[in-house]
Length: 308
Image 1 (cartoon, rainbow, N blue to C red):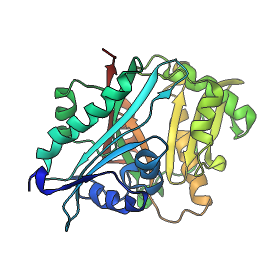
Image 2: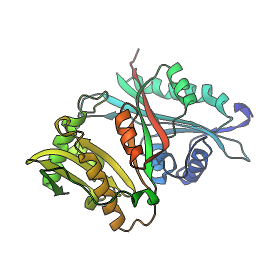
Image 3: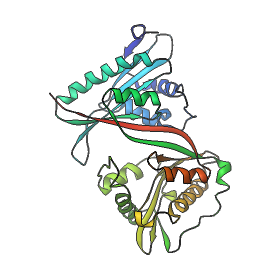
């Protein structure tokens, strides 16, 4: 099937279900773990304010490809960030040139307004996608693995074991402030650190409708903020530990406690999931030793977009 035999048109909000079907055709996509199969995320990404989309679909068949370019978003660091996505069904890799040409044409219009950073986001990352984006001039800036803890593995966790001197702060203004302090200390040296304010960071995690405050905690050791975990339904969204308190069992204790609290919230037997950066092999090995298994891969590519 060639591109000229396909419809090319914008995506309608009522067609989000087609995107979920497309995501599930991707080789290695495990069930519904990924944001690529989350209707709310897809709606924001492809049908949100200012988003431009292009769909490739056979008149009598499924969607074969989709691309989206969001409107520029000025972040706290002052740079305008444009988010793009491109999804191909297996066997439709020949449509990449058309996808990229359409994306570049939209970006050319955005570039007329000055300099921006373009972020290409993949929620179901494959080796072929890495090759395509890098050959198009993008750099893989971030990559992480999705892991899940099956319910049968949860039974082996046992009770939470806190390190000596640790005290837990339940979620609220004090915990949010302490967790942000830990977040800044734990992640500021990593590439791509966004430099959010406390209000921006809190809104991005605690502002989600699926946020679970009962399972989101901050740990202090000798009254100093040391570690935190924030959770949404079924997800350990982020874990952070200050360098001085790593490798004493804080992350394990927080995640164990968070899993127990998510279960107490009545989430049944749905697996709990988390993400681990590929640059953190020690963390990956530690979670695998506790029964977590890799179920997916996601990443973000970047390049600068300059007018003229």
